[in-house]
Image (cartoon, rainbow, N blue to C red):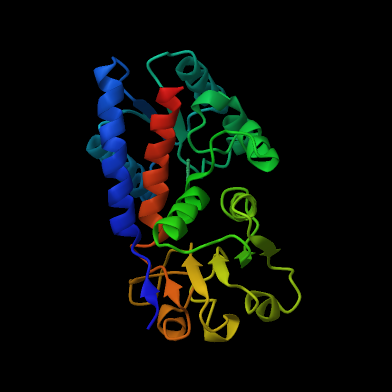
Length: 279
Ligand code: GUN
């Protein structure tokens, strides 16, 4: 049976470290503050935003909530971001995605000042990551690197395969694994013979977006399998992009869903907020 990579425990450890750092900053008069903006009331987004605010409370980060109505115009949202960009008290700005269809997400992401871009989605943050400069890194891939490091899994020299090429997960994941000296392949929906590619992986990151897509025949014996997906199956239970029960005997280590990558995303958001305040 594969070793379980416990994202819940590792994220708790990171949040405890950040709690101390936030307390030190507060003692110096710098109270870490995150502005959280939600447009509309998508139930999944409300849960994510609620979890982020709870984590802020735990770490000792002040969270300012902006709950805007579904029909809020793009201009109103951009004006709010502009005001928060200029507010010295606010260290980080998070706009929960997805946004309603009448608002252009790219314009909103670009409007956030790069120094407050705790999601790491701004093109300046993406560019910095690409050329190896310091900057904010998207939370999910940053959390996966922490999961690997804190579980004692070496990345250097390993065959790393990322399935998925989104701006939020796949692309930054590939760049971070490369930064850690992994040998990186990015596979995606147009990859020919995906199984041949994923079977090369010592470290496989599945960000496919399809429930239980990665079965045992997609992995090499002894691989480390990181599951980014989160879905609800027929009986309303959570599952990932990986068929956990099928893969668990063949993998050396695997992240569960829930309790793997998910909690790490929030821990790294907290980390980015503390970093923003320290600057
Ligand atoms: N929606 C789904 N994931 C994310 C995330 O990491 N950040 C934001 N802002 N919205 C999301």
